[in-house]
Length: 378
Image 1 (cartoon, rainbow, N blue to C red):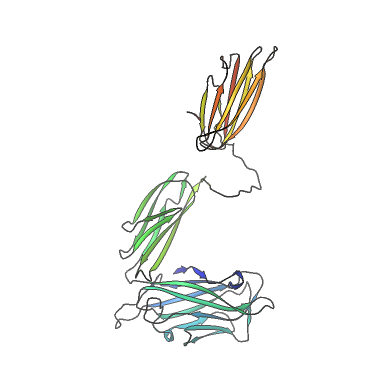
Image 2: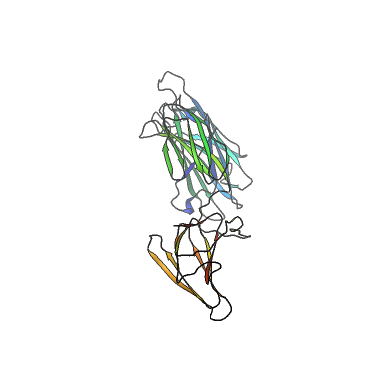
């Protein structure tokens, strides 16, 4: 049994259906009947699951299911009169309007309320599937309202594929399904040869027509993989999509706004670095973090340090000068703190001579990355 994704044809939010619909098919996917008109037709079944998601009931006059019939690729059935329709909702009936090619579901009265506890199904059985491979649009239209507003028509369209008899795509698996950050996975699937196949995930769209498996390395975030098969006439192709997922332990995340209602800890596993430069140095940081510096001048000495931050394009950005001067018998310290983005460069210029922990002047740099990261000398 397959689930078919719906497409809404509403011009605005006000035209969207008040009920939700989901179609499943048996077999999965539907098979087109043999092209030989003397051969028996393939038989299919549609089940439309209907529900009201909102807590406010909707009044419904009728629900119509339009099924294209004929001999062309966009036709689902060869003969609507052979279809057996049913509706599970008490007090409702369903009939075929042959001229409109619609199955009409209606309550005994002028309309009936459908609330959140009134889920039901519309079933179309014994469908003689058309002999032409292609995609058929199934239109579900409800005439509904809420409150005392006017009734109006609201439509949803489902696109059902009729596949060649020998087509198959199944058992799309990802192993292992749970990996550490940066781990590897193996994707496998079974497929027929009469289609083209694409693997889609993230920004990747990869042709895998001649494959039944693929190894992927270095997965850093939870990922859903989609395997898309396309076959039939290019003017009216049929498409089948299967999906599988991998869950990454401690994944990399890329988000827009981040709101934390509890406690945020980014330094818990940080690699703390302490450095005592003795001459001019340029560093690059591999991750976002905080660089803290302490400029110390021992008694009778002065210490000057220039800190230069570089822009992403390599040009020189801000430059600040920090001075400690100990004219008396006590050492003097001046501190500074700068925030650095991943891959940013920072230059440290030391004025005068005699820099070191036991010398007249010293500079202590402390690098605290947000998580894992290093201060790398260039």
